[in-house]
Amino acid sequence: MTTQNVTKHTDGKKPTRREFLTKGCMALSGAAIGLRAPGLMAQSQAKAAEISRIDPGFIGPQFFDEREERALLEVLESGSPFRYWGPGKPTKVLRFEEAFAKHMETSFALGVTSGTAALDCAVTGLGVGPGDEVIVPAYTWWSDYTCVVHAGALPVFADIDNTLNIDPKDFERKITPRTKAVIAVHLLGGLCDMDPIMEIARKRGVAVLEDCAQCVGGSYRGRKLGSIGDVGIYSFQINKMMTSGEGGAVVTSNPLIYERSARFHDMGTIRRLFLDRSGPSQVQTFAGENFRMSELTGAVLGAQLTKLDLMVAQLRGNAAAIYDGIKDLPGIRLRHRPDPKGDTGYGVYFEMKDKTMRDRCIRELRGKKVPAGTMSGSVLLPVQESVINKRARHSDWPSFNSSHGRKIKYGPDSCRQTLDVFDRFVQVRIGAKYTERINDYVIDAIRQVYTSVV
Ligand SMILES: Cc1ncc(COP(=O)(O)O)c(C=O)c1O
Image 1 (cartoon, helix red, strand yellow):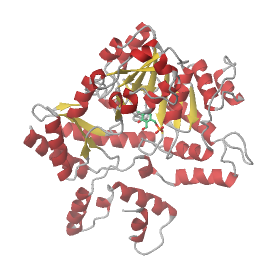
Image 2: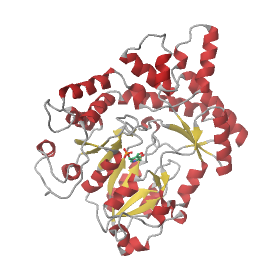
Image 3: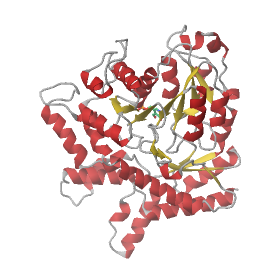
Image 4: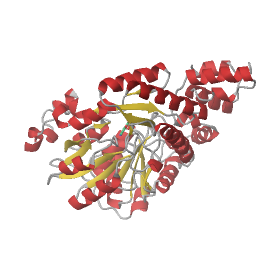
């Protein structure tokens, strides 16, 4: 259903902007249908409609309201969409950075154009370069690999385990004297087991970059994700928890990492406002990029941030209800969640004995209109053709031209455990606006299908 269709069905009157935003977004999520059902007949029709279109939708846009609208209008009316100057006094990105750092319990935040740009800044912040190795989970998004390659360093893959995140034991096995950093990616709304990761990293002198792109607003044992390692990054692309369509952020409490990241995001130069935050400059100008965030993006993100706790609570609550409803199924092996209270609840995950059973389970759940699938949103990196063939933007790229770069072998043998985990897990997507009725329906469906398949 398109937003246009939604507005056409509102009792013939032109909707207000507020109605347009709310109804459009909620109907697109497929979760609001049960809310307008007066009589018994209408109620059962509403229930059927609700169940026939279970759609988790995009989280952030389901919460768009007059706050985003007002903030965007302020930017347009001020004539200042650029963060540093304009006829008005641009402060949206500035204020967003301050609020985001506070929310994530770090000293500094930097707004950038995407999560990928944030990773490039963070890797620069850590001083990663040619000759260094960076350990990256074998299943994650491309950018965790490309940021290492763009820095001229060598990506070394570690397997994931049943947290669906990096296996601390394999991380430790992959450390060499050249290891500069590990990227701990909190994937699919679930947390890496940070205590062992931090202990190993500190003992072996390895920096920790937390990639929180898929887990914005999550926490681990009471600490905000992104604040535990040396530096954290986030994405605000539409599939993520809070969104401005595109966008990203870097957080850290280390002034040197902050200055290097801030310089890289703005041609290698630094503006007073960043030094006012992090103290006297420690780095000379170097060749950087332009990853500056616009005021329009900052406006939307400032508004979305005020709702982050609510969005996370709703999604997390729905996932917890479904996990709770299936956990007593005999023999079921759920995703290992090192701290379920900190999970953001993007999906519910359980393991089948093999790929055939997993595929049957997914097929039958889909037959019942449950949004089931394989783990999604990332890539099995070591088996990608361009990775196996170590292709960078230039054939003499330093990443793969060192003696270790020439020697390293990617491909399926470098990530057997990851391939096995991927082949066995079922994902059921969760929506922030799922009703209790939808949660109960999904629980019943999983119980029936799981019992019939095993
Ligand atoms: C784990 C992870 N890291 C980084 C990124 C990059 O974010 P962006 O799409 O904003 O560049 C993504 C995007 O999907 C992601 O999933």
